Image (cartoon, rainbow, N blue to C red; front, side):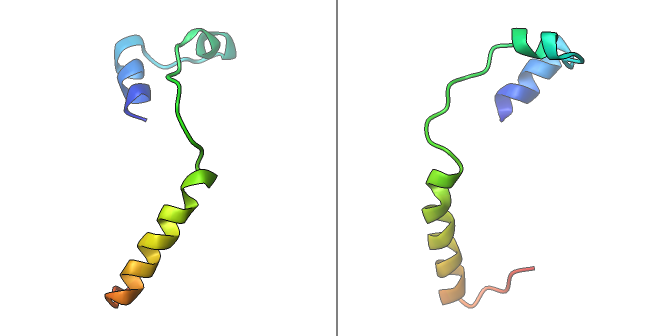
Length: 54
């Protein structure tokens, strides 16, 4: 989401829906749900190394 921070720094915050709709949003591939397998794998690795989670 670096693009969002950079956009706000450059253009200021969009304070209305109309302003937000005029801002370009980059295309993204995949979805959060599509990456759940990676999260599951990471948690399994942490368990293997006996890492305590907060």
